[in-house]
Image (cartoon, rainbow, N blue to C red; front, side):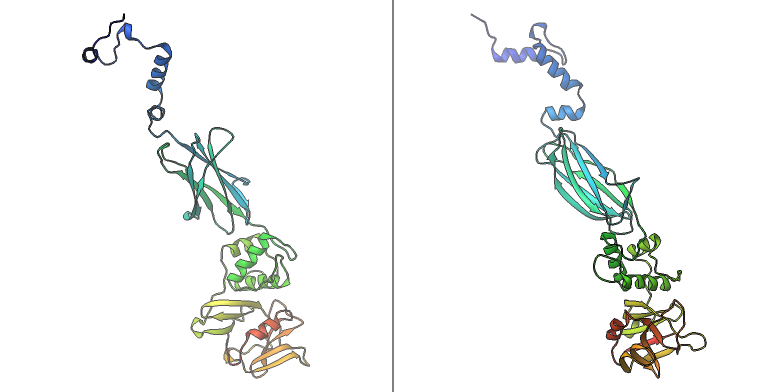
Length: 341
């Protein structure tokens, strides 16, 4: 029969043993000793995990679809976050930045990857001229501690555009043009009306007067730069014709609504300047080849014409492209103000 010590005597004996010492006869089995040693020598985070505390979380972020840290405008960048190890119920928040300012965040539930890690994926469209960036954060929970990543950024490149090109880049370009008031055609392709809008943009910004949408212009337009600055913002809905720019502008307060290229009076027959009101119409063609004329002073009118060079060449009127004039004609109202200078 085996002899057992009373529990009180066992506790008293244990109290006499110095910390870290053990009686030879009480040594634990080899496997238990190895486990105890592993806990003692493991990193703090692992020891906490073994004892039921939240474990370490290693969160990482990477970007794909980039070339040398850049992506073509209107393309998508894939943001991938990984968290090691995987624990069911993980949530990772991806933060999005534009020019250093946070513009959004997406809270995503992690799924198990091909190894022992959680993974989330999201896509970000580079839809403007800006420096984009993303970072990620895992909020502490009962199983894992908090972790976060540094920001990873990318830049946007811009192509030149030609008449007849189609696609998402063209659609975004035309949307940005219209936001500033420049004329464009509809649909997914770059048509003649948008080319004339580019000409007007070039005129307003003192650039070479042609129809080319260079990569620099595309970038500036996506950035919202180069809008016409209204000179008479207190005049409500009105028309402006800055002869040095060779454009006609429909404005509402301080906002340009539509900007068209024109050709005004040549030096020998200059366009009259001043503040006038539209008072008479002449639809269709007249004997001089003027198309859908709207008069603002005597024989001076805004009208379409077969020839609209990039410089002042008319007999005093404000010539517009035939294709634009019906729309211009319908925009003007009787008695509306026009400022010419």
